[in-house]
Structures are given as structure tokens and as C-alpha cells.
Image (tube, rainbow, N blue to C red; front, side, top):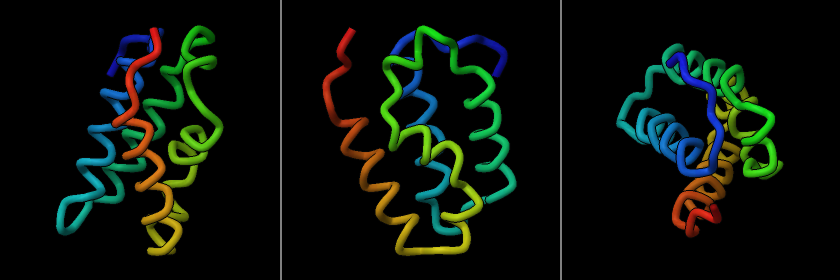
Amino acid sequence: MSEVLHDEAELKRHLALILGEEDCGSPGWGRVEQMCLDLSKELSVDACGACPHHIYHFIADCDIRQRNKEYAETQRADVRTYLEARVSD
């Protein structure tokens, strides 16, 4: 990933990829961690307004989700709700 994210639709696309990786039967946590790291680096100032606080936590808390199944389920449910919401641009 080399582009800079500028809108909510792009953010949602990347989040869906991460969620898909985590939702598979045996997630590759190293890959998930790299995807989250790449996404955090690519968030532009413009995307910051489109990125809710709980989504920042999802991006930053990959290691916690790996260790804590209940926390992971809660975060993934929050992301699913965000992904299902209409893009606001």
C-alpha cells in the first residue's frame, strides 16, 4: 500500500481487508499487524475527520485483539457497524 487515504470510502475498503483477514479461520496476525501499521501510516489529515475514535483503536489494537478474544469480537462488531453505515462524503 503506497497511496495516502483521503476519504472514508478508501478507509472502509482497507478496514474491510483487515477484517476479512481477521475473520478467516486462522488469521495471520503478523499480516494483520502489518496491514494495520500500513493503514495508520497512510491516513492523511483529510481522512482524520472521517475516522472515528473507535476505528483508530481498531487500527492500533491488533496486538490486544490477538490476546483477548472478547475485546477482538467487540472491536470487530464496531468495525462491521461502521462498514455497513453509508459513506458520508
